[in-house]
Length: 364
Ligand code: F6P
Image (cartoon, rainbow, N blue to C red; front, top):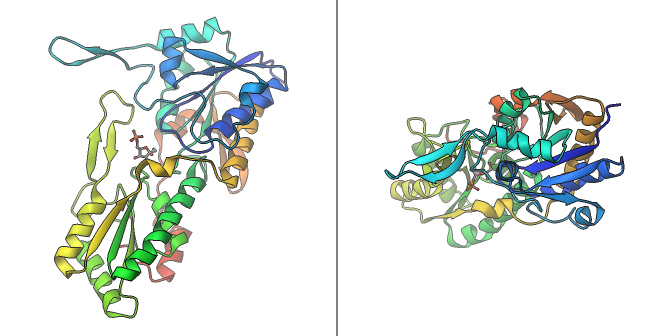
């Protein structure tokens, strides 16, 4: 067993329900092993700026059910690209702050850095790993798109929120005989929309992995209008796009490890359907509601299991790994491999086959 005297924990990237449960899982497992725990504030920004707080049992108690992260997070800052401000010409100035990160690690005598994050957060560990800092990753994201794990912290809660929203659109869409388009998050992966669409019995599911043809969707909703149903529910991923189109970009965040923010396709689809069919169409964009609030029981269990298993990896000396769940088993993956690949929905996915068997339209 490896001697671990002091560990650091940071949460990076977008927040999601279950982060606190993961912090508690790693933290309490460590404390009960007589290992000191240092929380890093606001992701890599806190590591660079040496902003930390000691975590003891009182700080880690009562947080299992809380959404967000008690440590704060950041999806705009990486060790190699720390934003310093703008020069006279208005151009952003960045500093390579890897040495500052290592200085914080040295000052707090951290034996291991636990990073709870997604592929962006994991890719930021590369220069730290190369400098000899042992890192261990815990996968979280509502997008569920991290390579090396079938499930990420936050996904099941976000799916529950997406499903609840789609369920509610059902009754209002039915009453007005409308087409109700609901845009969900997920970047360029369709897992969240696919699972929420399946759970709510949505009539149309649009995901980035299956480019759509708007005429096919229009013909499908027209057929439903003329049948007994009269209305249609469309679950649309923010990264969905037409066969001859590209994802709709809503914002570019300068300096972010993943600068593109998607959004707006839902409105475009509702407009195009109304134009083609004359059926009144409305759009709801769920946005950050999908990331807020308390974690589901499944996410609490997953985060606690991932957190404690990640600490076991440290005790085993299995560094530069990410804990993952593959076919129901916890497995250590290479953290940099997880950072470099993305897990998209395969076309032969059991979820897609189930939806198609329910006569769901994918617009293809
Ligand atoms: O990766 C998580 C996620 O919520 C994506 O689904 C979404 O595209 C993005 O983050 C939004 O980022 P931000 O919080 O910067 O708006």
